[in-house]
Length: 462
Image 1 (cartoon, one colour):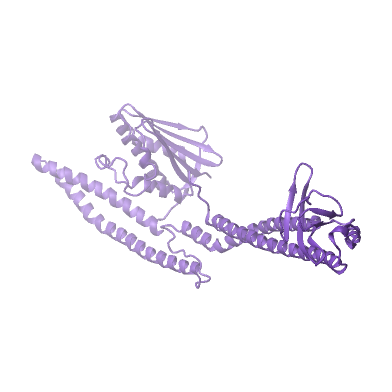
Image 2: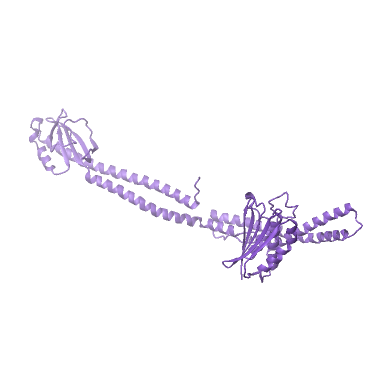
């Protein structure tokens, strides 16, 4: 599974990776230069030591046969308590004289390296030594002088430098992670504000805008662009709402006339059978269009905030009994039982009674439509944690999983082939959602294929 990180986290990670690589490269550069400087100083010191010994040999015109009594002995004795190892190799590269035999001074000189650093490692030894080998070029004596020095203090300095670098990089990275995360968050905070404001903007609050503070940078330019987009959307939405409202108002009158004239003519007894059938179809379709127009007007008024909500206190149990009773005849025709389960105590709510009636009518009507013969529709009212809970449960076929995210959308039908035949407009659940939300409540549902659907309404009680 692909790991998805927030932009702030990704920016911080990239910042830390680049900073870490930079710090490691810089620390390595410093370490290598310090190491080179230390070794150069050691080389100079060893070279001076070796040249001083060679000058003693050349000034005293010493020969190989009496080298054992030469001033080298004194020089060796002077350095005997130090970490210097001094050795004289004859012209044949054999070891002739040393202040003490040591594992780094072979009996025979194999190479003529001027300066080198060697590391000795075995079970008992782990040491770094610097070696310099200088030729003797006097007339009486020839050979090589080798001077060696243990690099204890130099290695301690380099080890300490490594430790300081590691600690310094760690501390700096911790500070950089904290600071980088904070700065990334600060830099992206306008984006967070844009997201928050954009989420708050809905069809009822399209006039809201994102605050414009600094329009000179990229984020400011984005805010200006989004505000312009919201302004265009607001105008388009207002035009659409106005059109819906105007069109619905204009259509109400002709639909009412068509319905009234159809009913008037249908009351005549001298109608031919063919005309009567045609008029019944006209009457049925005009009823459907009238119902659709009323729903469109209600939604248009709700979108524009012009729908008046007249709240009053009433007992929800009594209202549920009345509304359920209105469906008794329809339910009997389909052999469907309507069951009401109510709490023993009365539950009072402060709401618009006509809207709550419409809410119950829509949901119970849907439950009966989609419940097969022999099924049942159960209406449950209860009080829980200061809220009214209304459950309308049917034993229908349920809502397919692929449709469950869309059922509250306007004009959305689960069964597109049969909903029109059953008189559905696709607006009922959208109206139910608006009624519940306008009363500061919530509406949800639970549905299982072949078992049924339960709509759950939560409203505040008095």
